[in-house]
View 1 (spheres, helix red, strand yellow):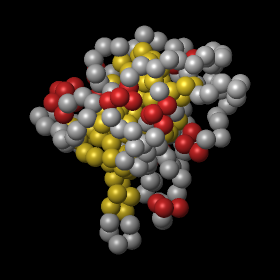
View 2: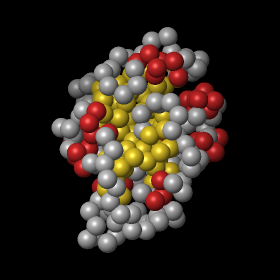
View 3: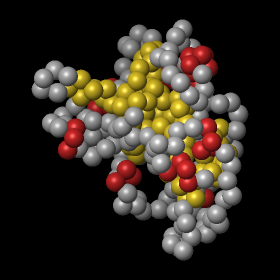
Amino acid sequence: MCGRFPLTATPQDVAEIFELPEIVGFPPRYNIAPTQPILVVSADLSGKRTSTLVRWGLVPHWVKDPGDFTLLINARSETAAEKPSFKTAMRHRRVLIPASGFYEWHRPEDKSFPKQAYWITPREGNITVFGGLMETWMGPDGSEIDTGCILTTAANSQIGNIHHRMPVVINPQDFDRWLDCSTQEPRDVVDLMQPIGDVYFEAIAVSDRVNKVANAGADIQEPGVAKPVTQNIVAERPKPSDQMDLF
């Protein structure tokens, strides 16, 4: 699951990793939350890449009223190609989502222990890239809303000590294949939706200031004292009841 993430790299750094001549400008953002704009990179039929801002929370094209629809910020990569909410986007509108890592919370089953927030960031460089999906919802009045979500997979051994899910990470050498929705069907990119290696990320315990969307400064990434982790959660567990983790 991924419910918050930062993007603090410069637009120039982001443009460089995607080999784009230019990219949508943006300031450093330390606490991006659902419904806020996120930067995505897509490709047209010729393979030309472009960047755009979309609302974080995918809305399928067949939804009548987005206000009455569940907020889909994540999609389980194992089932996205079959789920009605995601299968069209999985086939035709795969995107890349740059980030400076993501935030996750360890929730001990022993409720006497408080949950602990972690900033999970790549060990090398200041950008990681998540696999994502995009949809454009059109209202009856002709209005359009570009929306997107982040694909998740089972956690690797390191992240599994914190949470049982993590974002799908796409490596630069696989960008073209992931974005190629004309010749690469979902079954052709299954191998790209595996947990990233255990040494890719480092997890830094941070304070619970990240819990509040209003806290959006760099101070939310300052290391804090980690609370005890009561168990190792390497194996996949049943999905919790949290609305944001239904998929």
